[in-house]
Length: 97
Image (tube, rainbow, N blue to C red; front, side):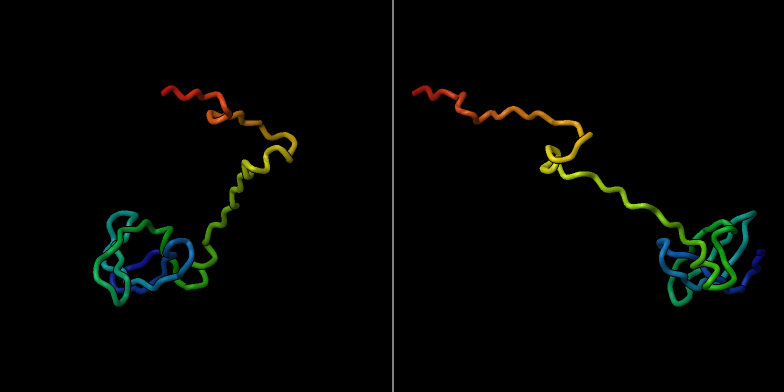
């Protein structure tokens, strides 16, 4: 959707909250918008602006959490590589006086 100067629209902030902004100007396919009630401005592409709060919330991206196995449990799980760490304190030291 095309917006003009003075229009209010919504953006998705931090992929979690829909925030209302005011269009200050348009430069090509980018818009300069100002958060309502705040100083400063943002330069965003047209596809990051939405007419409704619901439209902004619907654009949220979901990501799958990456989980790595605990190294302490590596000997119990099949298919995980073993990491051999030599024990430097295994009585191999000699004390010279």
